[in-house]
Image (cartoon, rainbow, N blue to C red):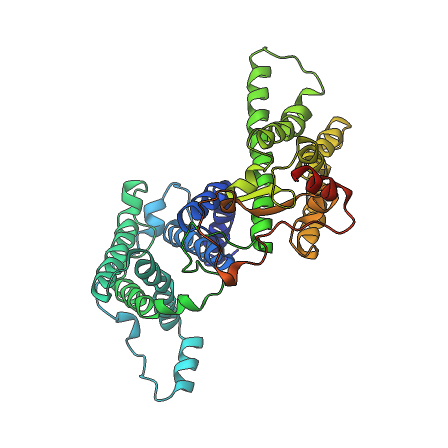
Length: 396
């Protein structure tokens, strides 16, 4: 793997791991702060995380091992202090065709262009996040670039006996120019669809496909995280002789126990799953009353609870490696159900007569929904569903 591809792969791997770890807190924060989370906003946040990690990986990696003669191997590296020295002997292109040919064939030009492009996202981030002007973005872009070059010049601030990357003043020029270009191009981010709207955060929003899938993803991640934490506790207890090596303990700690815990928490908070609450959703029966415990349990069995029980049974039967195929199948089936049902209640809602509404319409003092966002806010019965008919009669 080349030196340019390796940092990109590392950055992508770290970004995916961090996105999975912090997904639920991110969803909770966005819905409490803005009242919604659009797909475009999620993509932009992930892109910002990926960029920061990529910048760090490109600066530090590859990490050469310190061996005998390390400084003799890299001793030929000397700081390059002459501005634009890499363009010596390069003739100024007279047309766009010559410029494209030069970019495709000249290594110095390619390196300079890459350093410009590398800092364009930084200019966009500084503008969109901190609302900085052109001058401040240029100063901060230069400061970040200088910190990177000093990191390379000092051998990662003394962690290496000598520098293994080249300090180049041309990089300072290219990075600063890239940050300025990003600041100028920052308004183009508004063209990204699915970003936060101008609707006040206290107004109810429609129950969209993306919102339902977000809540389901949070439930699945909570099942995994709780199981992983319980497995660590179980391993610690076994290592200290507190618990014996019983075969049913691990599947219970990893799958069955977390699934039951999610059910108890759902019952304790009114029937809504924690993933639904993260996305400001709640389960209800037409015409919007609180669902009975039996319906909540049935929906749990169809949804994440059934997945946890099935995973635990497979693990206890000696097939722990089937957890990923089963999870992918579960996600595909329930995702298809959300996409196919008109009100996005999904298969679990269809089978149990439960629908999902915006949690903000629970309060009588909640502001009325905007007319353009009214779709999906009402809890409508499923035609032919005995559970919904019973729930409607009970509410009357």
